[in-house]
Image 1 (cartoon, helix red, strand yellow):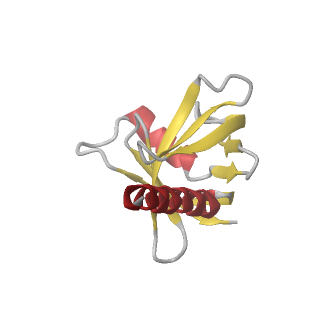
Image 2 (cartoon, one colour):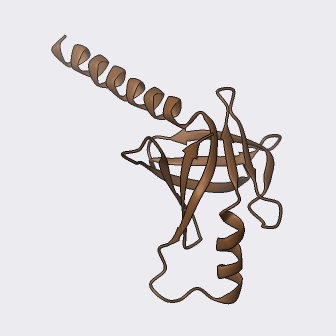
Length: 132
């Protein structure tokens, strides 16, 4: 009986933690700065992409819709689906109509000012964002 109660408590805590993370992410976010986590100097294409990402905006809706607004880069996602993968501690964005196709993965950290820091998968870029 004790093991069942402990299992239920652990499940409740994990479920609550995931819901809190998702609640913090929901909303419209504007990029306020972009950093590079690359040890070496950015090449010309990466430097251009970094400048373009400074104008980006992200939106995460409670119904799973996601948008990554950036006109001139391959990061533009007009109609995506997002979810938080608690096992890998990552936000996954896929195509709305084909959720098996992952378009982007973002790791996030909360900042003291209420903003978030998104580390982009397979790029050297870190987005610092604030709610719009």
